[in-house]
Length: 316
Image (cartoon, rainbow, N blue to C red; front, side):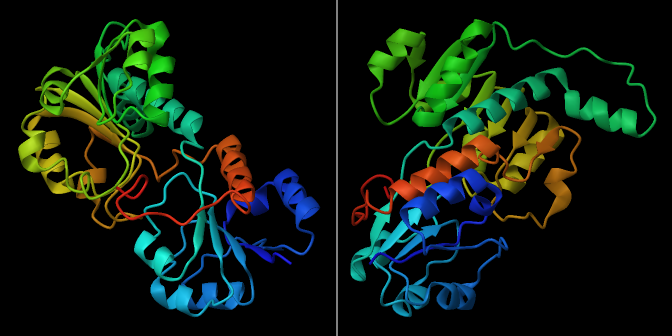
């Protein structure tokens, strides 16, 4: 008999999805207290279970070694960068995962952050909370601007669709060829250097992997169009945050909105407290509908899974 445990914290907030799980696996153990698990807590909670519907908990070698019955880790998450495919192969553990499961939620947030930066909504709100009535209220429209999308997978494509009514010029940079999609939606594929040089607004939708960690170094930030706006809703550790801060201070980068950070929660407030920096606490996939989609993907992954390959998507 398949014994299922749920460590993901947000399934407890979705009674309709809990009912769906229990209708198939009546004895499933669910994290109804929304516990944050450390290694010891995971080992205790999952002892004797074959399948875990996982959040972003630390599935280290110590955890896996102490769970000899565990056969499947099914992800209730959009990303897989918290898992090590080498470890999963070593212990013959299968992974269930659905790509792009939170694409609507993240793409909507990215669009809203673009408009926020253009119209200076956050800075105006901060000023009014301080009792000020800002004398300068002129922002910019999204309509007609050049938007660059770095990473045009599931989320990037949804953002392209959301941008259609704004009649923007869209540039996209991705290592895969999405020519049919680009032709359909009027997207021009470009190399990174052209993306950085031409984009008035740059939205990041890359996976975090060996090629993207640290990609936006000081040297790359200096290649961006002067006065660019940056929206980052992908994963942390892609940007040199100190270099970004310096360029926000001197105006080379006009403003930035980040939903993800190298360390979460961030400890260094020097970047977050800048007036032209908008921070959100990794809420890209936090719409209730996205939670439901990720939870249902986790349920499907109980039976739809495979041994992951190091160096092969999504571990490339």
